[in-house]
Length: 519
Image 1 (cartoon, rainbow, N blue to C red):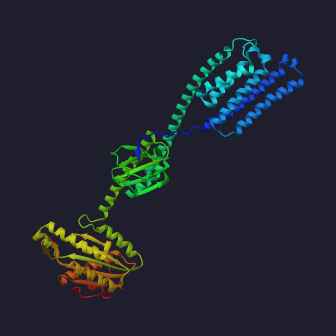
Image 2 (image 1 turned 120 degrees about the horizontal axis):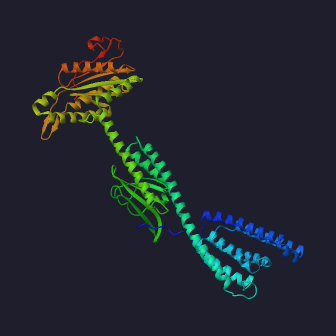
Image 3 (image 1 turned 90 degrees about the vertical axis):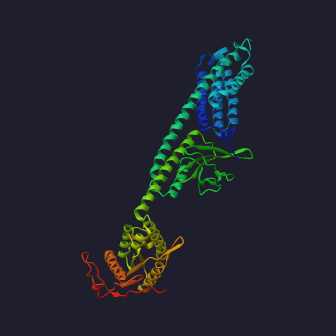
């Protein structure tokens, strides 16, 4: 069930990549310090004269060997806090051994070398480990080097007190530097993330442009995954099952429904399982479609990521609004607002494409002869109802190939039908259009006439329209409920754009006499 978002606890034994890099630097310091001590042992005359050369060589080899062994162990141990603590203890003991080695040179000041493990602890494990490092260094000094600062039984607490002052200063300085570095790194990381997200969001605006509303939501979900979320879903408002899901489905919570936020708000939720955080989500309402877009992440979702997702949904809303506006403009440009059929220009474009291809075509006009009388006697509102009813009947016979040509005329197109089948369908169309139109308790009878032309394409679409227009005029002259069918094959190319087509001017055209359709 959802709860207030809270960050998940990090694993205790994990070490960041930066700590691994710092340990590599410590290896360099360790080797450099061993080399410096070895150089001092060899070059300092009092020490060299007081010990045999063989003993000095063994001592130098021991110093260098211990450093190399520690470096090898540091490189081989797994990068965890427990292994770093082991190295810290060993380094403290090794430096105590170096202090004993150079005690003849430094005298009572050999304990100063124990400052090194305190500094290393601050670098390696952070300011919180400096106190433990001080304890280790103090115990080592008392046990290994000796109690007195001057080697003659001085105050035992003198050296630990001095190391404590050094450790306190190192801890404060380390904390201050670490906090500053972490803050700077956080700012730098945040700026980098924001720059990448700005690039993605700028690309999102271009990517979403021109898509249909449904495709826009799909693309927005895909972009959310590109922004670093594990998954993204689109839910209808108040429903449990998403319309679509993109990305890792394992990051999507299955139980419960997504609450619809207020417009312009982002709701961050942590989903728990057995009282343990399982996944996190941020949900935003897309107001144009009414859908809820949700991004999912197994890591905590902070304010920056939530604002980024909110910006993405705002961009999506603009794209959906543009797609809806574009769709409405397309419909208005291609559809008759009264009947919902294609308009004259859209039909002419479809006819031009069909007439340019190979195959048989049938083009017909429907003339609603009695529409003027209906408008005069019953009003234009009743006339509009009659046109809507006739358009519905036309669509039931010819599907989407019918259009309103203007005023009281319809036009239709049938492809890949032989003349007899095209004529049979035109008969069925006329029979359906001739039925009374129910208007409330009354029934309205409207006179219609149909002119049909069949031909083999390719052929000029203007010729087809003029021939169908002439056939319709013949049907109107023949009386109510009549149909005239003209087959233009073979057609002599005598039709020009200046001449009105008359059926009598087509001696090679097969013309059927005006007739009523079979009842």
